[in-house]
Image (cartoon, rainbow, N blue to C red; front, side):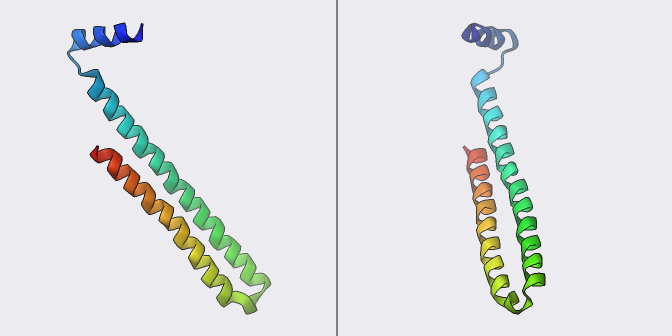
Length: 93
């Protein structure tokens, strides 16, 4: 049934359905990569909020906590850059 509809649309409107599907999948992949950016923003906020709470409870360990927080922030940003790479590769294919 779906194949019949695809052939009908292809003949009726002279649209290449496979190109249309590929474009739709590219847009969806890029959209899913943007979800990763939203998750990274939330994770960064939670991370630094936890850092502020930890420093307020134990100010003597502020330097060690800050180093650990920066390492966690670097890990979060790694996922952001990976999402950009995936989106770029999906767009170029």
